[in-house]
Length: 256
Image (cartoon, rainbow, N blue to C red; front, side):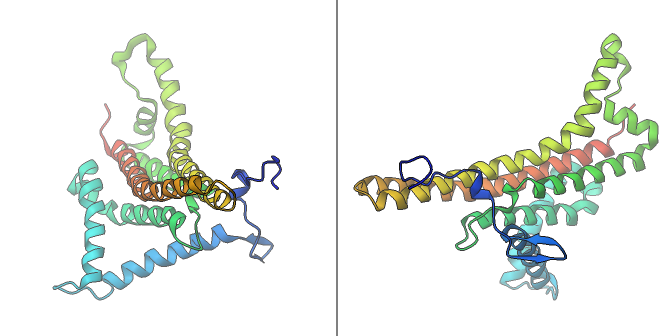
């Protein structure tokens, strides 16, 4: 019986907590950390296998790699930053996209069955990296005065409301932006995993009760949720990278 007395083991925050697999140097190493490391290995290994010995006439793996690379390059980076400015940021954005996508997709992989990005520390680190790149580029392109104008939305034509706008823009760009960038990814993966766990556990629970027909409905909903999650996982990787490109575009834009 569960704590709520009905026998149904309802999912909750405990579904996102894992016991340590091992302790390395005093640091507890759990399943999520392992999946993050495997994610890195998968992404690096795939692109090394696809482009390590690139051929003029590509094989199947190289064609898949080129299609994925070109999707991010043309569909996100060029569309946001343009070809001339954007080309140098393509490797960074491709790495971000596929790293996030693979982290997300573990949610529907047997045995793993957990999206790494539903633990907020991982989206926060990625958002912090994008934020640091944005800050560095803004300083490099515009100098200190230009950076100040960029992050405060300085515009003399605003007149009397300019000080208020500058304060709002300052906190929005330097504090709120990285937070919302991370939370958008985290919240979608957190909610999606919670729904998947709920329908999966409900299917098993109902199958072992007299409500077997309801178990069938719950199982169908589980399959629907898996299909929906596959879509959301890719969309969230796309949105994260699109926002990263838009931030960089803002850093490169001229402000007067």
